[in-house]
Image 1 (cartoon, helix red, strand yellow):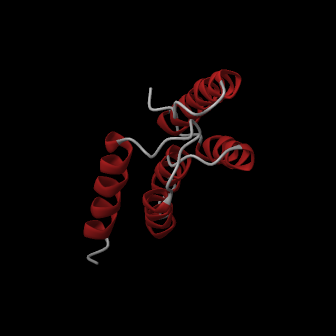
Image 2 (tube, rainbow, N blue to C red; image 1 turned 90 degrees about the vertical axis):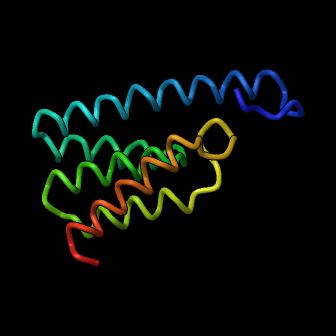
Length: 114
């Protein structure tokens, strides 16, 4: 799954576990957004960001800011996601992650007529 063959297997296993845990946290944050609890979603994202660096975190944070009506903050998050060179699993962001951040950034810019 995109891991370097030079990494020890114990490290690869830990990175996979961290990635799976992050997926759960971000799923809970998206659920909060979907249910109108933006503050809950932002807390989850901030907590996740304090432990790992992954471009999916600022995307989800941006979705929360967008739901709160803070489009400029959302744009900053989407842009930050595009500048991250590596995710929690130690590999570059997936094409899906990059495409999602680019699309969300373009949509926000269009809404603000930038």
